[in-house]
Length: 150
Image 1 (cartoon, one colour):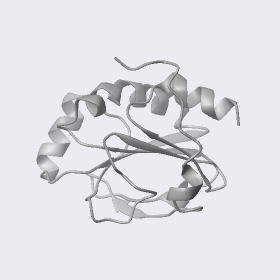
Image 2 (cartoon, helix red, strand yellow):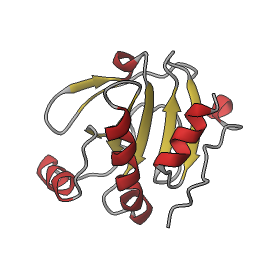
Image 3 (cartoon, rainbow, N blue to C red):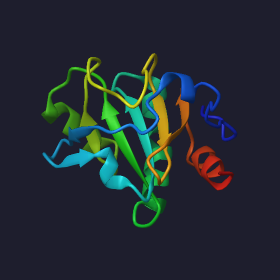
């Protein structure tokens, strides 16, 4: 079960990640997503896999957050970190009602920061700065609490 009080681990971000990260990845529908295209919004970059129980558990929380914020101040980008066909990934997304963009990635791709375990979530501020990292599950309330305290 996800704990609602779980916040991002802020202390290690500066030492382990790029100050102003950027990447370009194609989603499962072929649309290009460049991190810098989301400047002006908070961006939650969630590294995950379909086989990962904590990843699956946080999906409804990420969907809730994305749906509440996507049209004005924040988005979620899910970067899938496994070798799976686009068709299988698309089927998983449909069966689990994932509404945020899913971007197939790989363990050797350039990332926002280290992905030492799944799920790993990074939070990018509207000005493009990397401000937080959480290894382990997140909640919509935890993300909103962190943003509101910035």
